[in-house]
Amino acid sequence: EAGVAQSPRYKIIEKRQSVAFWCNPISGHATLYWYQQILGQGPKLLIQFQNNGVVDDSQLPKDRFSAERLKGVDSTLKIQPAKLEDSAVYLCASSYDRERLMYFGPGTRLTVT
Amino acid sequence: GIQVEQSPPDLILQEGANSTLRCNFSDSVNNLQWFHQNPWGQLINLFYIPSGTKQNGRLSATTVATERYSLLYISSSQTTDSGVYFCAVRPSGSARQLTFGSGTQLTVLP
Image 1 (cartoon, helix red, strand yellow):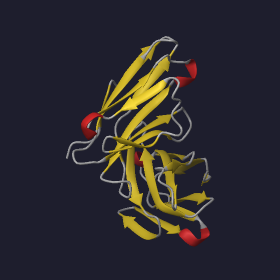
Image 2 (cartoon, rainbow over the protein chains, first blue to last red):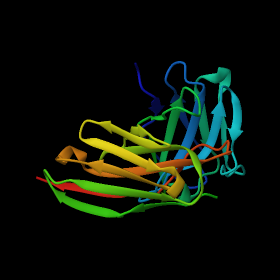
Image 3 (cartoon, chains in turn red, yellow):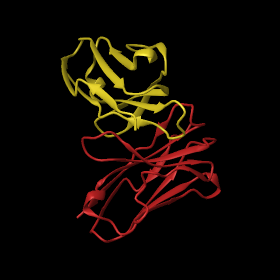
Image 4 (cartoon, one colour):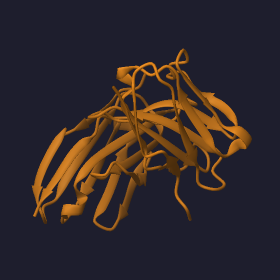
């Protein structure tokens, strides 16, 4: 089966600019997650969707980050405006449900200058 | 929130050696997974193991839920085993998804 797809793979922007990331989960996976991984650290959950509803966004900086999952399939994560500390790898993952194994995409490496 | 501690933080082995990685967690969990992040950044799930023991080839894992720890065993290590190994857990009764530890950086030398 096809894995989790993400794009772009790399992005370089200046601070205060906006950026958007796209994720296509594994077909049939109802649960979708966005994680932020700063260099040298473990991934940190930003937001979790169950179908197209938000289950947990308690660690999402809502003043600048937003995410949506239309029609319960693809998802986009947006940052506006970006800060230097947003430089990280943004990982999308999906699972059949929250009890099952998670499958990660290749990630988007964001550099904010 | 739940605390997840992994040890050792770094491990360097010669090819063919065995190793044990440890994950301690501060609260009861109903979901525990081990992941391998390869040098290119791809995270691959290894085990879903909230309790008990599982084996997959040269890798095996044991979780003792009552004592709040999990162990990942790598036998006859190969250079392709290099990367970061993460333990991730979800507290019992929580709707939040997995909280990751800080990982163990494994380097296997030829």
